[in-house]
Image 1: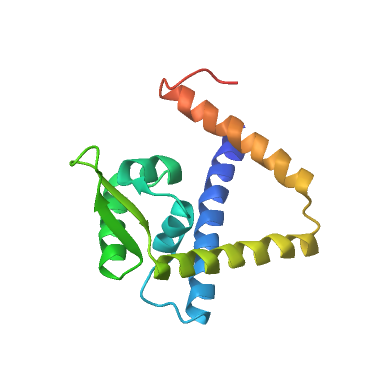
Image 2 (image 1 turned 120 degrees about the vertical axis):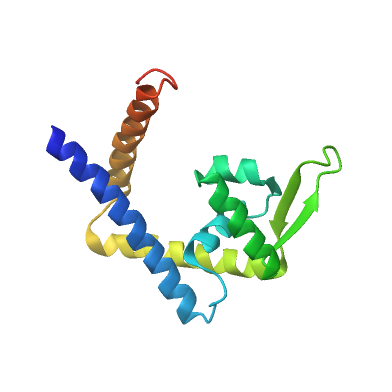
Amino acid sequence: MKEQYLEVIRLIERLHRQFLEVIKGELDRAGVRDINNIQALILYNIGEDELTVGELTHRGYYLGSNVSYNVRKMVENGYLIQERSAHDRRSVRVRLSDKGLDVHGKVNEIIDTQSARLNETGITDSHLDGTGQVLTRLERFLLHTFGYGPVR
């Protein structure tokens, strides 16, 4: 069991890195070179919403300091609009600019294309559902390990 568990964890990490490489390669082909793949995924996760950095960290499971750095860079490059909250002046909210919405659309197209191409591999919706269920159970197990709730 130990070796299988460690191999699954390694596989998850490799899959994530490979997915990021797909995003970067497709953005490069589309001529988007002033943003990295992580920043593109952050834009994708923001979508049409307006979020605080904390909400974005929670939604995307990014490390807080990395999100703050990436948000600052994306504001500087015109992908995000940053505004202080009218209700809490300490809180800063971000939303996509038109440039950010363009990248969001490109990432959405990449994911649509990748999803459609899965049919060529024989991977079905039920395969992905089953994999998702197992990964969700692993996530719950790890959260339980740190005292964040019961294993279900």
